[in-house]
Length: 341
Image: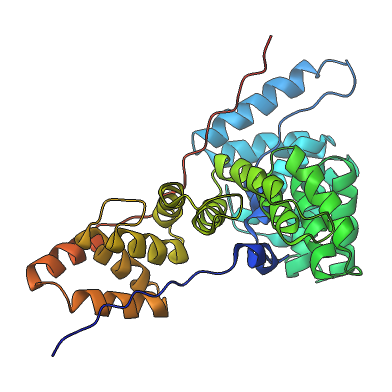
């Protein structure tokens, strides 16, 4: 029986990709992991005693001595020092130096928020979104995001953009969404760059501008955003900004595939199997199909089975071994350009 090899692509339209972002689950909400550092008001120097204890807490935290870090930050937090209150909230939320306690995390985030620590307002908003340690309250979350956004907090600005884009807790307003995405994008926040690029691609809230969209996707990709690499691969493949460039498309698909993006894994496998923009490599293509198929991608499963039926058992075994050895890793971030002096 003769098998016909039919490779089918599983590719979402890049212009629709940003709309899949969800206010409760996008990586932009992972800012809760970050500690904040002291910030002096105006030109007043930081109190030496606070500086010493805060540095000691950071060093203890960095070495994994969370009990000591929590103890030092508790002293500063009890004295009303906002950054320490925020960091103590992070420790309670993630169970570092003791048990997870969302109620105490929310309490300390609220106190730090009163001291105008933007990250604390953002984290407290996130807890209200999920109902962790506080009542689940979308309106309250939006209010807190707005307060943090006014303090130039990129994750909060991004989350407000999502709220206006999706109509979550506010009336849908793509122009307002674009403004908040733009504010966060200017600060180099990759998820905002990605979503703003989608708006420029679709002409929603802003005038359609494919060139600007590509620039923003490239900025997000340079910051290590795997989905931005997927979008760039799709755009270069389609030639949205000129003639198609299969070599550039393959480059970006490969980066996204190595980061674990299943759509990109199926797509780079197709290009490798057909020698489109890259050297043809049956074993490499079949390995990528296996990786994507293991994640349940229907088209990758079909492609894997079709390609496997056309090769020898020895070739197939090599591909399977390569697939089993695969471990995803995030894209490399490009170093920031130093300002000219």
